[in-house]
Length: 231
Image 1 (cartoon, one colour):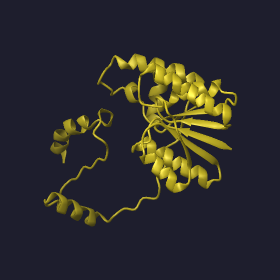
Image 2 (spheres, rainbow, N blue to C red):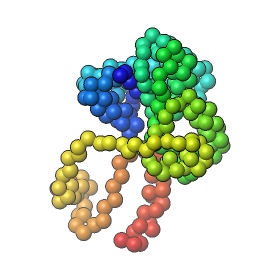
Image 3 (cartoon, rainbow, N blue to C red):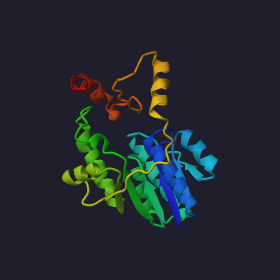
Image 4 (cartoon, rainbow, N blue to C red):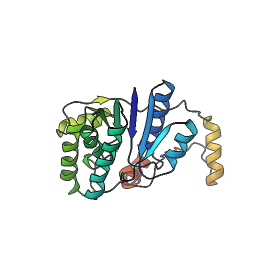
């Protein structure tokens, strides 16, 4: 079996790491895997270290430019006309356009799309409500070219069904490599040294993520005063 994993960008991020670990796992199971993406050296270096083949798509970008998106559709079609893959696995909004190219290609591989989140379609999204109907139509149209929809959250699947984005889907939770945890006392000591404060008998809330709207740190900041009243 040959599998092509496609993601819009090769920059550091949750979905990017998910694609990397999936590629690594497939290779360990003796499945031939190739990863395709646009800009970004982070994923490229990690794949090189594992000896996993990759493709840099010239026209795959995070963009609403219709010309570039159309060029990407034909770019992936031309690739699949020349190289046969059994499955093409898409992992981001702009990469989903490639499903059209996959079904137009001579090989017509099975197509899979992973919802790593609902982005603009999430009920909590408030930044620009005008985008919601546009994004809905975008996904609704392109999902016609997808054979299997995968969700990493049962709640996302429930919402997608409720808004009639999909009829069915499969939930496959993200796996993680075996983590190495430091003892609690050692972690507290590290934070005390870094912050130069005493954390004895303190309640600590931690969060790791980039400071972008979709990570919703605004909610965390707003809710903290209420949290402080109950701890």
